[in-house]
Image 1: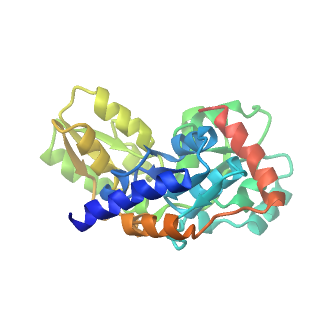
Image 2: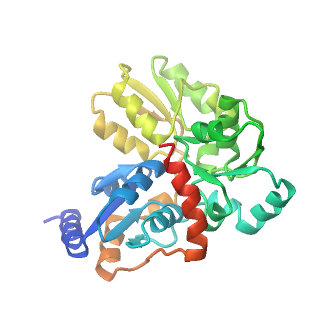
Length: 304
């Protein structure tokens, strides 16, 4: 038996022993996606975490995602395969910094992208994902200021879609900002019949060139439903594994090979096995932080 098959078999054994469920983000390695119980974007995985009756959640993504699962499911054990899988954008805002800006805008509603730490969520009024950011902004009373943290690009996109004035935090995800408008133009010249899908975390000039601006779950849906045979995909390259697997008769091209997140790729099947064997790298959130964060997350889930 090949090593990969041996590890997958061991993983299945451990899942039964630990009463575990495996949640995997769309940006993970292909072999990690292939052993998922649930594969999706941050909103979809949050929903699965809320619904699962498993005793253990093995979360293959980055740290803030596992924190969200731990907040939603305080009675479950949440593990990550690699404790160093963090998010550079989440690190661009701290609770202390946010409190300072809130003091300058005491009447603002704080909308927090889920790509942030539990402490930042606890300082926020409502969370959002790339899939529901527009709906969340539309829910804020028009007489209220909106402070959007930490992703400037997603906040700017949602503000344009809603016509709302939004105070934008100067954060961004480097992986999406490595996708350039010239990349889209170059590929469009080569593939004139291809539909262009980009993530709303991309810069505004990239978004202007797209046929669709979508979360990863939206890209999965459009790829399945569209009659087009070719797609240019402007997001983290890990998503292409799923798109190609689910649509073998269609062609998908990464906007640039540089849109690769090394933190997302830290998780491996071997590390998943080791995590469940030793029940190691548990993610916990202090209750005084979790209580505030839970309110913001639960409000977000109303807009799923």
